[in-house]
Image 1 (cartoon, rainbow, N blue to C red):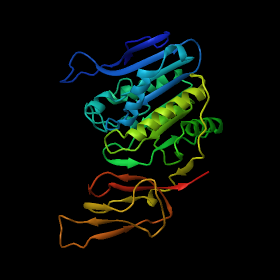
Image 2 (cartoon, helix red, strand yellow):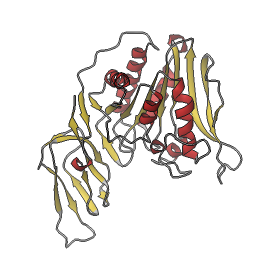
Image 3 (cartoon, rainbow, N blue to C red):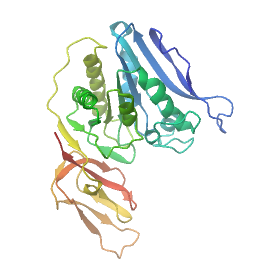
Image 4 (cartoon, one colour):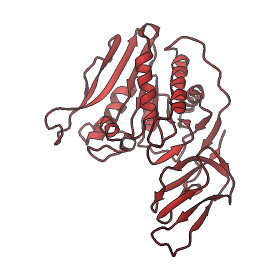
Length: 326
């Protein structure tokens, strides 16, 4: 995997990361992953990723706003923007790559001689992250789910890195922070940044498979706050309110479909709930003689995300439940 631009050069440069992968669509060429470098002299370097999952559009939209509005003369350091890290998936509006069926955010640390998606993960972990002083990976719930908008710092074994992750999350300015702990997947970009010692946040920005203007506006504002926090852009850093902080304590606290049917949801993401509270009802429409089943929350908590699917199957996440943390 090679870039078509010189990432060490000053100026505004727009090009591709070339992923060599021979298939029926591209037998002898390459699959392009767009990349933008905005560099003005020595200074901090920040990586910004969108489209890690191809059905999550708020992040790429906010990043393209930055590409169009950032003025090179106002920058000290470098901003590297990859608005569609999993470009084939984004074009296909698919969570996983249509080329190899792999989930990019479950492919790190990758493999330079591996499948298409593994090559992207390897390049990010071994080439891009070592260049960076900070990184941001923008997600949403995609077509399958909807999240309460939040930033995601990782609680690492390195306490200093954990503090810097949390500082980025606070500066990003969303009213909710989801602290990633022991249940975080070690194959994610967050985990790759932790291995590289690079301060990083991800963000979950709503979802549903479209572009919510209010969420995208908040994302764009958060990116500008991070750039000022890092000293890449000058200007006063706007004050943010005190965020609510949550974490996942146990997968047993969340609700998953135990049968197939229509989930008649009664609670949305962003709500506090109590143990025993009515969460919704499963209607077994394929078995109309079967009585519909009431579902209740097993614990007190906070609904971090809800499914965006009406018809669900066994094992589908219905409601993701987190607990408050400090």
